Image (cartoon, rainbow, N blue to C red):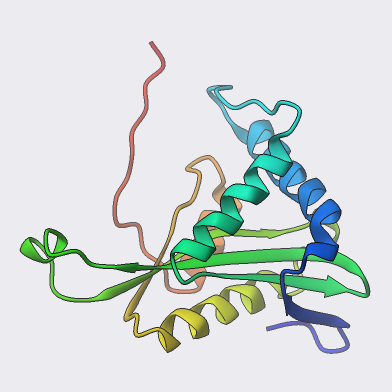
Length: 167
């Protein structure tokens, strides 16, 4: 929930926000690079444009959403989510379900601790529920302790864990 008095609006992504979105995606990745203890991440020229293209293709092909949180005309944060429909092969080992997946959630540094992440996540949850999903997943970079704590506070539980070892 947003703090009372907050002047934030939630809108669907529009091309007019492309330049800001590219910058925010690069800010998001720089944050992940900064907290990566193995120093395996890097960012090169064109990253933001390529990532935005990938996000837009993903939401287009998987019944997804792309919401921006705007403070005036500035992007304060964003969330993307998609729907996973089970294949016949999936059903061999799991109960029938539709799965929502938050593929990105980020709030700019200046806009954190105001309830914006919770609001964006709730919008994604409402969307996937409207598409018949009874669960929602989110991938979290393990070193991102604040994000893991945020999701845990909202009822998310670890389900699968990748382990990595630098050789």
